[in-house]
Image 1: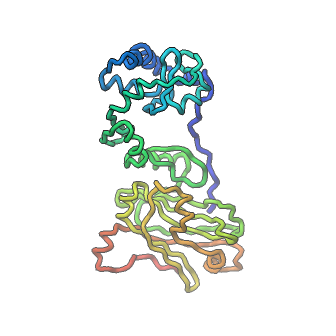
Image 2: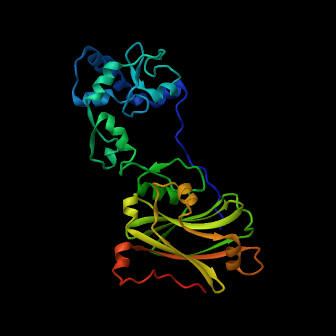
Image 3: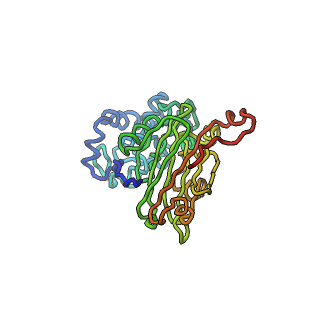
Length: 323
């Protein structure tokens, strides 16, 4: 079953002065406050309140916290180094040329601050020294997840409930409840691979969401087929679960057991590490039977909790037999 790649809306970088002016009108009053009061206080050595300093260090373009180098125009309006290139070296507040002026006073103030993680609104309670904050945010457990859909370069990010709805509504991914699966994959010309993702299915079990991938790609000179599971959550949670996959026919079978990878690991990273059930083309065609001109694979499997499996007396995974 082929799935066509689907386009997905992405955030467009601001490259036009008018767009910046229109999109950021909501922070105009904040920018004025920054330039007229806060920057003046910083320059004169007067420290404002902690809340005012936090606002002062917020870039008026991207609204993220500013880190050195912090730039300012001749009128004292500040912005981060990333946005300096996006606004074509023009101040988004007064439209004056920015030049290469650093706001050293504001950088000194930043060194003395402790700030909450930028994912505080998503549940992170941590507070860090200003320069430790960035390092934490790259690994924060509350940071948004990337869309796990592999059929297109989708740039959507969000928490798990948001991404589940996004996969269902925007990518039209099949949703299933339960911890066992039995899928049949059919392709008329199994020799056409072209790194195509064939199917993504989302399963809801144990109160969690799992992504089952099945695809064809080129491994060296030979095309192969691969199925693997990803957990929609962090790696530490993923270790609580195991899964099994089985494919076969005509008295032969292949079985894979493993721990699902977190969606923090990209689809390509998991695929290229071969962490899943890999089926060589000749074996896949053997399982398909007939004249071997059409791929017909049935993949069955199960998801279980590690402690649950251990408590069953050491028995193996219960996988449906193929007929």
